[in-house]
Image (cartoon, rainbow, N blue to C red; front, side, top):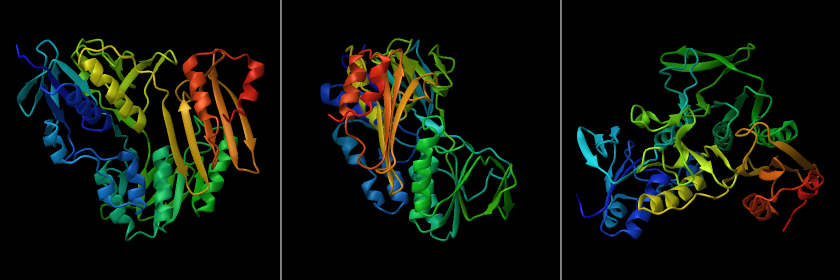
Length: 410
């Protein structure tokens, strides 16, 4: 038996790299192997949209370099895919070599779903938008593009539409649903985003599902929807969500599902010594008292800190309230915290609209408890801290109090 702890982390994104950093901080003698299948050290995924908009250089996207890993004595394996986990032997296998572990972290995230429509496979100008290489390829294509199409009603599709418009390319946005983010926003909130998009010159097409792409010489020259709408363009960006990278759990006894790898509030799976963190973790939240998956940057970093403590033998519960905030074009900002109807469809909602200010606010309740909220509009963030504290407190609020809570500002 080794007289030092051995840690293996699969996935060098924000969750995995944060965990490695914390392990080294608290254990100077341990051995850490960190695997990533991309050729890059940690980069900031939330900086990819401004990079695509040419508002920041690529150098600003990179967070860690090889020298940092060497300084922290983290054995980094880039361009390396871990092939399998063998829990009974407490090893992982990569490139035919075995790496023993005392604790293993799976932080493999998810991969973008292809559009899967006729004519899209192999088209050189139809892109997903998840990785640094995607950003480089789309950015280069936009240099010579006159028309671009963003496809999907997700945050990713919005970021593509915004980048296309910012780059002064004629922009069309195809959304299958009735409005942007229709599982979270209602029709009234959707109107605010619609106005912001159109103010930027974006042509938004609702209720439009892609039927096929028109091809010529290996590229898409047009997209045709089921209703017969056809748009000729030079560049097509797709935001259709993610498939979780759970393949390592297959055949190991680790419980997993379509939503990710199942783990408890300490981020440990049902197999002792194996943990999950970040986007791929379908974890139990002791504050909201339910299981879900949260694909945000802040959540990944917080997971990394908690899981490192527990990999070292601690017992810390993850209890942060997840939060996401972004600018929506130049006319709107959106802040979301806690649960929303996309994760728990039967939440009860109260909302308030101030058309003069361009503000929309919604609060989500579950069994008389505040469990989440959404704020839309520039400067519409007052009261957020109070809402988050109310969620953490698990206090129950009678229904007559719900609407007055929309005016919290402290």
